[in-house]
Image (cartoon, rainbow, N blue to C red; front, side):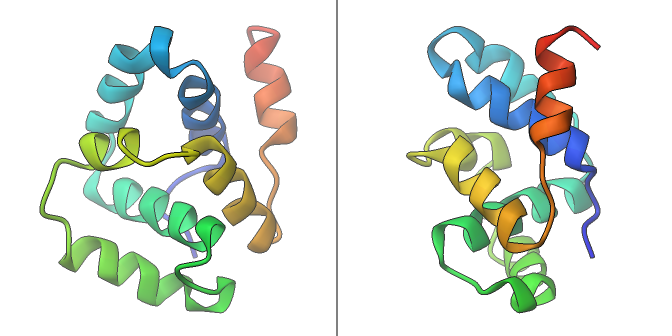
Length: 108
């Protein structure tokens, strides 16, 4: 279904919440992902903001690949409410990043 782990999405969520402080790290983290991971990340965000339904995940991933015109990090960092959209997208897909976020906050 997704070519990215929930743990990686949790890392993006946490960095996006601290964008004023963590933008360079977030940009580097996203830039270091494979194209497949980036497309899945964008697809989860789109589902979270209501652009696609959860059952359209494959179409969303395909669209993210086909319509990528800007660097993924630029696109995502420029998206208002990125962390909320990612969490909502995971919820819609029946996934949760809460345990991963807690682990990352504790330094795990």
